[in-house]
Length: 441
Ligand code: S3P
View 1 (spheres, rainbow, N blue to C red):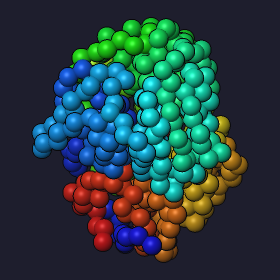
View 2: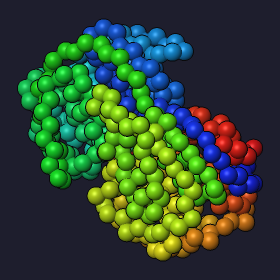
View 3: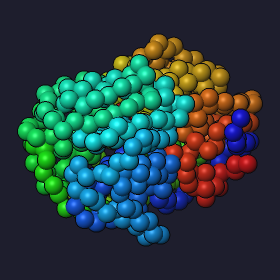
């Protein structure tokens, strides 16, 4: 079993300003777009993590030159459909759902077969959601019953598609958008609401894209095969990483935190809306707009009177990666909280609805859950004093971090396995916790 941490004490009150790691969604998208631009692109503050490294390593295998310095990452793009693919190329996507889904769209026109593999967690995840639309473009794909390993061979004769994205998945939407980049004609997408970073990048690059936003759906049209120039990008911090510090502050005594320069794109701020409905009073400061993305500092104080929520399902996709930590906060809120239509959570790095149910029950919280809904009986006096062991079989980074926050804010003696999982998204998580005074061995 891999490395574990021991937490035996609650964190003492803190008042700090922190920078969390860079946004993972933006980092991966920037790399994939830079590789297909003509000329050099630079990213400042690119996320240093395994999920981003697998993307950079894969691009190098596809013939792209990448130069990383302390200050920036520079990618020498070769233009659309210009990868240099060797025979028998295998790309290892590691743990990354985002990279593995989107790269399949990027390879829409590959002239040699590329094999895509991943770790144990990624290999249990569903790929029919991207395989089906990609086949409609005319791309050749073989899979292991819609799971990895996948072999993809692009087509010279791609045809544009009309696609209905109905899972609220930005990964699926983005995979199709990247395939559309290489496809002649107009690809039309009707998509349920999900994060819109790919759209913002396309607009920033002045690619031919039309977007009509209606209440429930976004309608996107992309004209493909238009080359674009290399571009520089400053990646802001990730709200999904901030989420753990937001929860830690809310649940700790007499504490305050200012999380600097975070991407607060509306499609990502479901956690703030949910927690504020629970009385959290989280504030944004110094708001600005950068290349279509909203950025701000997030200010949070401890909250003694959290109340339960009947969470509207419309908020689900805007908080999709944050539910583990939201469930933890609901466990200490007054009243019964309901969260519904969350079957997608079981499609993540681990079956998160099941895992959350198990961990919270272990903590003595009353939970009623199915494979899509969860009802949490909150207890404002929740204080833990037993011993807890978190095995984290799928090495899910967010399960590890949520367990650390539970230990630091609620007490008890915790042994939490798979510390290495944080390398995928938030390698400096533990050092930041220590900088707030958290004791972790
Ligand atoms: C992501 C989209 C979400 C999210 C993932 C990152 C992205 O997945 O869970 O961590 O960058 O597009 P889905 O689109 O599958 O919901």
